[in-house]
Each structure stands twice: as structure tokens, then as C-alpha cells.
Amino acid sequence: MRITTGSTSNPVSTNQTLGTYGNKFSLVLDRAFVKLSPYDDLTLWGGRLPNPFFSTDLVWDDDLNFDGVAASYALGAKEPLREFKPFVTAGAFPLQTIEQDGVVQARDKWLFALQGGLEWQPNTRTRLKAGAAYYDYRNITGVVNPVVGQTPFDATAPQFRQKGNTLMDIDPGADTLFALASEYQIANVTLVADFADYFPVHIIGSVDMARNLGFDDAEVSARGVVGNPASGYELGGDAYQMKLTIGYPKLVEQDEWQAFIGYRYVETDAVLDAFTDSDFHLGGTNAKGFMIGGQYAIYKNTWVAARWMSADEITGLPLAIDVFQLDLNAKF
Image 1 (cartoon, rainbow, N blue to C red):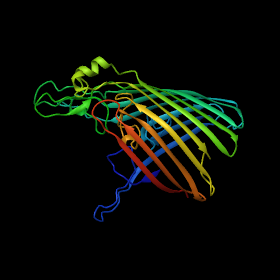
Image 2 (image 1 turned 90 degrees about the vertical axis):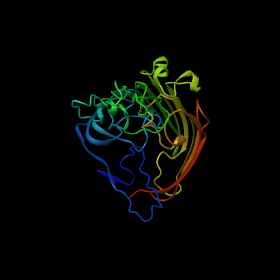
Image 3 (image 1 turned 90 degrees about the horizontal axis):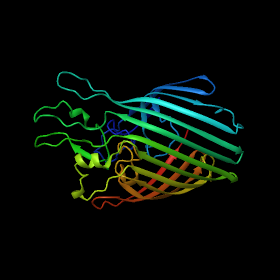
Image 4 (image 1 turned 60 degrees about the vertical axis):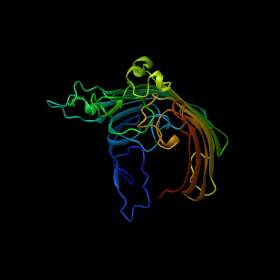
């Protein structure tokens, strides 16, 4: 189990806002899951669990947890000297349960996921890891209500989103109700190379790429509120992120350090904007830019971290957002 601060309505942030006229902080049950390992190489999860996939924050925000079940088989995961370690992970996660009746016709929303990969460690100072995943969202695309005043498909609108995904109006009347205009079946490839030739300092490079195979430009543009040619938007379903990290892989002892630099490019419908990183461009898709930062351990298990993220929109009206974050972390 894990308890955090933050809002019950935001799945990608545990931040607590100060300055609320003395109101008390909220505590929420962030994780509550069962983890079983019936065999050395097999792991099973059930409940509200941490991200079970090998990934970066391009697709999944670091604070995001998953409701559902997952299973992972990683051959030789507990053998540190094994050279090749293949792995496969699968999961089924309900996103929104909808009670159907004579009026409501929207269907339950789900995420089904499958990932396979390989970790190669040719020697004690080199580690390469690659993973290929397919994330299949079901029933999250908007459906227009058939008649003014009837709301059978209101629940196809998302319960939470950040910004960037193409939207459509599913209310045929004078009011507006926005829902996602695209399908989302995301193919994701993640590569990480870790070199420790200057041990204990590591040089770690990562590349993460995503493509929404469910994205159809013509179909989405035809029904998207901001996706028609007259609006000046150029929709897209591709994303990538590159990052270079130098320093200690984990900060434990005093005076250990780490620095990084990276670049990120996420088109409008490459990933679901609700679940991608909530800090870069203040969350969502349709963003490009760089990030730079570092960490330094001031005591054992206590470190400060700072990072700067500068991002601009890819298409549409200008929206430049620069974010600076300074954190003090302690582990006990």
C-alpha cells in the first residue's frame, strides 16, 4: 500500500498546493495491490498497482498507477550474471465502468497491453535493454448523441484529460460536450543503453518512440473540433524522446550526483494526453522541446533535484511553456 498527497481527480500528479487558507492536506490511497511470485521468473499483480511496463514518461507519467491485473515473465531476472534476459508483460486495466440502462448506451472503457523485450548484459559494465509494447484502448473514442436532448453516449467523453488530443463535440444541440476524436492503439519501442566504463559513474542513453496505429488523419480531421484544415492544425500520431544521463544511477550516499539532458516531440494524437508526463509543457501532447537537470545527494538517502523544461506547441496557436522544478527528496 502507498499513501500520497494530491487530488483524487488527477491520476498523474501527487502535488499538494500550498496556500489554501489553512485547509488540511488530502491523503489518498495511491496504491493497494497484491504481488505474487509463484515461480522465480513469474510475477503477478492485482489491484491498484505501479506501472508494470518497461517505459519512460513519454507514454506513462511517473506518478500514474494502474487499476487491474498484470503478469510478467522475465527469464533469469534474479540472476545478475545471466547474459540474456527476455521478458514479456501483459495486463488488463478498466479505465471507466459505465452502468448501462435504458438511457445510457456507452460501453465500459478498457486498456489491454502487451510488451515483450530483451535485456542483454555482455559484461558487468554494459547493459542494453529493449522493449516493444502495444497498448490497445477500447471504447474511449467519442460517439455523437443521435438526437438533441438525448444523452445515451455522454459517458464516451473522458473523465480526465490534460491537453493536446483532438476533440469532437458529441452534443448535437447548442451545448458542447467534448470527447476524443481518434482511436488509440499505441505501438511503443523503448531502448536503454547503460555503460559503466567509468564506474561508479554511468553513462545512460535512452530512446523512446510511439506511434498511434489507430490514428486516421482524414477520419479524425472530418469530425475533430480543432482538426479541420481551416483551423490551421496539422494532426499527427507520432512521438519520440531522447535522453542522456551521466552520473550515479541511484543516489544513496552523500556527494553522489546525476545530470541529464533530453529532447521530446509529441504530436497531437500520438499518445493519450491524460496519461503522458504532466510536467513537460504542463502536461498533454502537441508539444516539442528540451529538458535539462540534475540531482545531488546532500546526505545519505537525501538529495536535491532541479530541472528545466522548455516546450512549444507543434501546431496551432502559439503556446510556449517553460517549467522549472526544485525538489528536496528523502528516503527512509
